[in-house]
Image (cartoon, rainbow, N blue to C red; front, top):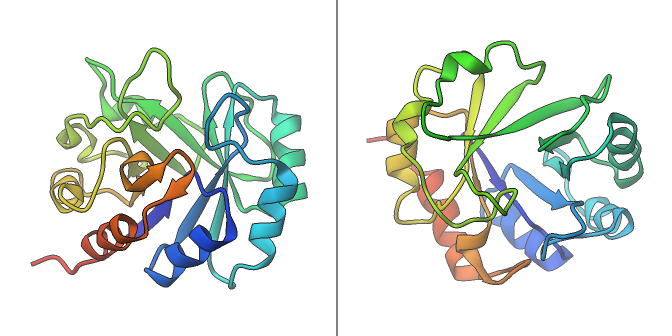
Amino acid sequence: MMVKICGVTNRDDAMAAIEGGASALGFNFYRKSPRYVSEGTAAEIVSALPAGICKVGVFVNESAGRVSDSIRRAGLDVAQLHGDVGYPQGIRAWQAVSARPGFRVDSLETLPVEAVLLDTPSEDLFGGTGETFDWSIAAGSPKRIIIAGGLDAFNVRLAIERARPWGVDVCSRIESAPGRKDRARMAAFLKAALAENI
């Protein structure tokens, strides 16, 4: 199970996430987000990470060129794309898709990305809503699915059971404040997400 801690803004939270078993960290480059980090800050955190951790840049309404440049400068592995974003050539990409009413997983088949991050719909926010959706709609997807939106230690196993995703993504529900992770909540989430299926 790929487990991503998103909205990382500092080295201490990054290292605590990895120690708890996270396999991916997300760095938000959307300037309007309370979890925004600069490329320089992301690069400083990334330089301290051990090998094998997937480093993900979160982009909203950015050009393919800007995405490519930021991924390179910050030393990241994957571009997570929200809104009206160009697909960067030669870079691993995940597409964020809202689980709106009428959503069908077969609509994802032609997206030119390696995975789809399925999140709760919002009129105002690009992720980080803290709200859930009907996870069962993700089951049987032709693409790798990452479940996001309102996950915490108390519901992540149910989400995994219902959606059978490739990965899960958490942000706001394990924070003490936007961009600051609550260590106990994060550790509990990671333990639950990585627990063996019974």
